[in-house]
Length: 151
Ligand code: SF4
Ligand code: SF4
Image (cartoon, rainbow, N blue to C red; front, side):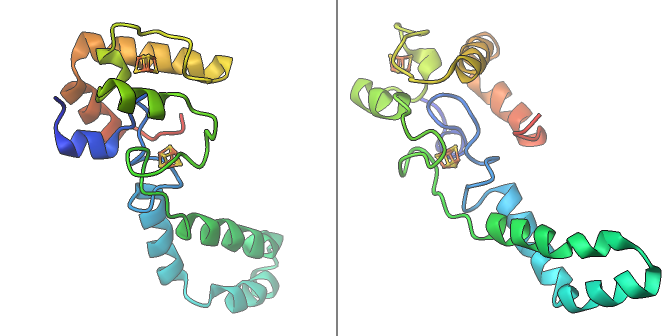
């Protein structure tokens, strides 16, 4: 059985919930909240900087803020606690519960046709679960901690 910390961070398919932009305790949400706090009322200053510095980049601040607010408001508790907000048709979540497995790489049916993933995600899923089988879940998890989810 995998360690609870690893299971909290990684979904049963092997993808990192912890690194997902939608995760309530994820790096992206945490960094967004921190940046929002540090920026304070920058919106008012952006207009001044546009004039003072003659740089039209500051015109884009409202769009940037909208995205930052979006990241900061995300609240998914992760795949093991609730249904995935991104892959609504995911077949892995229900399947691993029925089979009482922590991860797909442990399954004797892997790689199966129950995931409902598109071709690209299916390929990622197969590759990373093969990697986990080879290196072990602990080593794989250590690597996910220092790698961005979106590469
Ligand atoms: S369950 Fe889906 S939406 Fe939620 S953190 Fe995991 S990958 Fe992101
Ligand atoms: S049958 Fe497929 S989706 Fe279900 S646990 Fe096994 S590998 Fe994962």
